[in-house]
Length: 87
Image 1 (cartoon, one colour):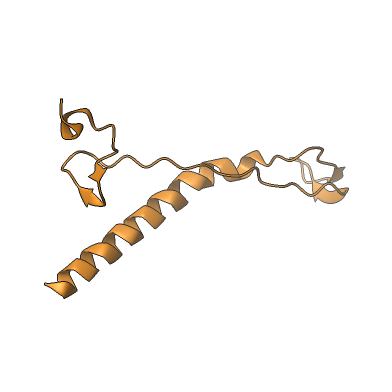
Image 2: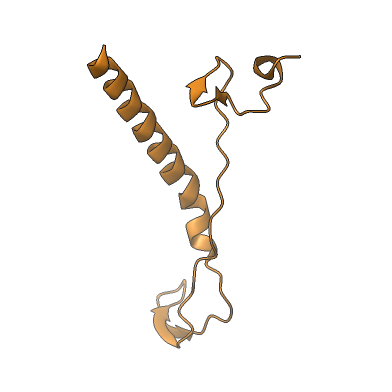
């Protein structure tokens, strides 16, 4: 089997697309939380305070995928325009 048939390279060999779907893998560092007592409101709108322990913020996780997708598309568009300018 050739690399284009298996796509173990993620669709790119030596910096050149091989026709297979592009596969992008990314890692995100833990998002720090503010460990101080913070004033907020509960679901009913009453004043409340919270204290977050540890290094986690799950609210940012769903936002990572669209940001990564947008950045990949920007880089691909930039490279396409660069290639078009060279020709």
